[in-house]
Structure formats: C-alpha cells, structure tokens
Image (cartoon, rainbow, N blue to C red):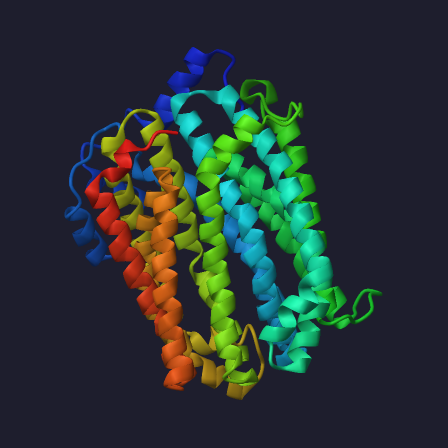
Amino acid sequence: MRRQAPHPPEADSSAAAERRQALHPPEADSSAAAECRRHFKWLQLPQISFLLSLHPQMNQSLPSYRKIWDISLPIILSLVAQNVVNVTDTAFLGRVGEVELGASALAGLFYVSLFMLGFGFGIGAQILIARRNGEQNYREIGSITDNSLYFLTFLGLILFLIIRFFSPYMLRPIIASDAVYRASLDFLQYRIYGLFFAYANVLLRSFYIGTTNTRVLTYNAVIMAVVNVFLDYAMIFGHFGFPAMGIKGAAIASVIAEMVSAVYFFIYTFRRVNLHHFNLFRFGRMDLKVVQSTLKVSIFVMLQYFLSLASWFVFFMIIEKMGERPLAISNIIRSAYIVLMIPVFAFGSTTNSLVSNVIGQGKPEFVIPVIKRVALMNFILIGSIILISAFIPHLLISIYTSDPELINMTVRPFYVVMSALFLFSFSSIMFNGVSGTANTQTALLIETITIVLYLAATWLLAVRLKLSIELVWTSEYVYGLVLSLLSFYYLKSGKWRKKVI
C-alpha cells in the first residue's frame, strides 16, 4: 500500500526477506510508546505522551508505528486530493444557487450509492490481495486483479444502462421540489458516464493498498483534483471559452477528471510495476472460479457499502422534507464532514490491509494489537484536526457559500458533527478490523443493524419531533455508538479466527 511502486525482487526468497524486513523492522524500539513518540515529534503534547505511556509493549514482529504511518500517509494525501473534487463542486455550486447545491447533494449521493457496489467489490478484492500478499503468493494477485476488472466492467455497464434510462422514474417519487428534481436529472445524466473510469480507479487502488505500495495514490489523486478544479471553474461559470453550464458542467468536469485519473493509473502500472511477478494484466479468458471466490468475500462488502451510502441518501430524503434551506445546510455539513473524516478513512484502509496481511502470515494474535496501534494514531491526528476546526467554523463554512445567513445557520450543526467525529474515529477503525479478518458477512450484519437504528433516529428527530437541523444531525451519535459496540464485541469474541479464505 505505499512507499513506492512495487518492483519485486527476482527471486521469491529475496522477496520474502524484503517483505519481512518491511513488516518487521530490526531496529524496532523495545518500547512501542517510545517508538510512537519518536515518529510523532511534531505532536509535542503532554496528553499524547500520557496516552502512549498506557500502551502495552508489543512484539517486535508487529508492524511498527512508522510502517503504519508510511502506509497511511499516501492514502491520506490521496483522499485529500480526491475530496478537493467534492469541495470544489459544493463550493462552486453554492455560488450558483441553493437549488443546484441541494440537487448536487441528492443526485451525487444517488450516483455514489451505486458506485459503492463496485467500490465494495474492490474492497473485497483488496482483502484477498492483502491476504495473498501476506502469504507471499504474489502470482495469485494478478489473477484476482484481472478477473475483478472484467467483473467491474460488466457491473458498470449494467448500472449505466439503469441510470441512463430509468433515473427519472426512480427520482420523481422521492424528490418533492420540482426544481431540485430537474437539476438532479441534469446532473445524473452526465455524471453516470464516469462510472467506468471510477471502477478502474477502484480496482487499481485495491491492488496498491493490498500490496502496501500506496505512494502512487497521491500522484493519481492530485492529477484528478487539478483537472477537476480547472474544469469545474471553466464549465460551471463559463470561462476559458466554455459555455456556462451550471450543474451540468460540474458533472462533466468530474467525468473527465476520473477519465484522466484512470489513464494515469494504467500508464503508471504498466511502466513501473513488475507485471510478470504479480502475473498482472494477462487479460486471458475470465476465470469464473476466481470471480466466484472474490464475490464470496466481496458480495457482503458491496451490500455493506451500498447500504451505507444509501443511508446517506435516505437521510437527505428526510432532510429534504424539512425544506430547501435545511437541505442546503446539510449538504455543506456533509461535504465538510467527509473532508474532516479523511484521516479516519485512510487509517481504516490501513487497518483493513494490515489485519488481512498479518492473518496471511499466520499471526492472528497480532490482529488486536494492530487495531489498537492504528486507533491510537488515528485518535491523535483526528483530535488535532477537530481542535483546530472548532476555532474556525465560519472560515471553513465560507468555503462552501458566501451567504452570511446560511453560514451562521450552519455553525451549530458543524459543532454537532465535530463532536460526533471523535466517536466515529474509533468505531471506523474497529469496524475495518472486522472487515480485514474477511468476515464480511458479519460486517454487513453490523452495518445493517447500525443503519436501521441510525435512520430510525433521524426520522424520529426530523419528522416525528420536527426538531431543528442541528438536533437532527445528533443521529450521528447513534451511528458511531452502535457501530463501536457491535464491532468491539465481535473482535473481542475471537470468532473471526475460524474464517479461512
């Protein structure tokens, strides 16, 4: 998942030695607390030293804090760049109008909910790639990757046809505002073309994270962000010879940015990766057995991610019943929330991959210690971000809109989300630990129970009790708390040790 593009050694014996050296650094400090303090000198805070002093000593073979950080940092940077796309769309459309702002949230979530089916398949493939990487069964990685590409292309075609021809019938019954409905259709009819490129990006991201070579993710995401920002500005407002297309321009810009990103990913992979070592991109006939084995892990992740994003869509459907202003506020909050959760997502991906890797090495006893280490690092980083953000809410919100009244009305929900983020930073790491054990059916069950209770709380607060928008957003506490408790219970039970893939 990191450091540099994989250039595997020629002999398997040297490859194994190199992997062992990467995961088990010989210079590892005897004290895990001392090691973490050394790598986080930039966080010279007394409370952090106290937290580290509580951390138990770890076996020398456990992935070090430096290793975890080296894997996570490129993912964080790539997610920052990718979220520039989300922030740019929201910020620019917030200056076009509240209808466009609300429609981009609804249509965008609708698109992303379907995209998450493919993303979930990619996460399942990532779990298998990481497991084979831990086993040093490198040639099997190529077979998983190639057959996953075939499957994702087919899935993308099916979803494209559904959205292209049936989205009006799907959106009309659930969107009350005629203006928001029309703008949502305008966005979706163009945005759906990006699905094929997005799925290609998903697959290569899974390959690089699963093999713990993640540096390319940063380069790729920066390219995509730069292209999107430029085209957003040009196409939404009509600059550099482009017509002013508003919400349609935002959709087209995102599609082109994803296309450029996919092209770069493939060029980089063909030029920098030892394709023979991984048996990668042979493009033979589809092996249904490989697809089936991948689906056994992926199907539950696909449903989990679909349900997770679909719950956001339902959440916004509930908010839309409150009016266009609460919908605009919630879209700003959602965009800011996702940006601030970037470290959580990155460390979650790291947890997922490292847990699968250490199990592949035959060391299941390291699973809980790995999760603890990642959770501690995540808490330190996300806590610092939240503390800084809490002092500048107006500045952050003004990125999305120049309306003073809308900014002031968004501050209270912003603080609610900031406090919920503390809880989510722990729940996400534990939940990704469950997924990393390949017990994806259990992860789906945990997510389903959590989402049902979360949406029930949202409906109760917004529809039944008709409370203010900031109180409706307290339903995030329900999500984080339930996810934490269920994930913790399952990991503590040790039932995941019986899973074989």
